[in-house]
Image 1: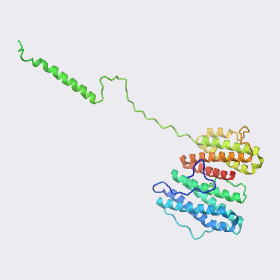
Image 2: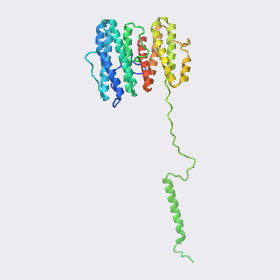
Image 3: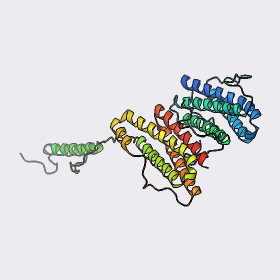
Image 4: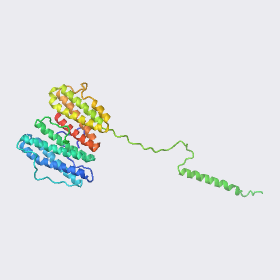
Length: 166
Length: 181
């Protein structure tokens, strides 16, 4: 993870699979599978967001790449921990219709909110320091990416006090 | 009866030899068993098991830091009104963190939490960087980075419940650094 005193803000933390050795508990594995699914949705949905939000293309490219890396790292983590890592679906149903930039930005907020919530749940399932670090990196990256997009969209406030907590 | 001077008297000497051999054997046995006949009896070996000191609760420190940063954000807004739109939401976030931390303290120490609730979140005497908006923003960014480090450190060692509180606060502080960049 990034250094506690100088954590990254804009660039995503490099996802790692340096997980605790041994088998994952059923609770932790389930939470990680939910996080994996959220990352898979994010990778898929940001293609759609990019199509309707060309003004934020640079930010969206960075964010999508971050989710893609974390998706791979999470799948590896699950497999190393003796759990299954289901692959992504061919497509997903969206919670809203996206036909213009406002809808695209709203979708990105939902995506990052879901990812943050999923990683927050992982934190609550484990005492492993390394696994907590991985989960906090996922939570922090989603919070920062959502803030990046809110700043770009001039949304006020750009931040939330407790990312991932409902 | 007269003894023959050519032969030493045998019978009277036998007990003395035995006594000498037995005495030497006893000393040797005692020495091999760790007993020193010349040692003073005041030296006593004791095995003491020292208990580890109790782990300090990080919440009071986190509360103090958060309260200080709430005050500094408020004073920064007062010092430079042009930063109000940028800093006011951050102050609201930090005030929410303070409330949550005091509530968490109240779970284990209601009296300490009650005292914390009474403490002010305004203090004009606490300074903010002077020299203009850039310096003020740099100071607030430094505060956010410091706090993020504190919460990240506490996060790793906390209970699951507390980790689920400290983690989102650390993540929020990462977003504050972005806003203040």
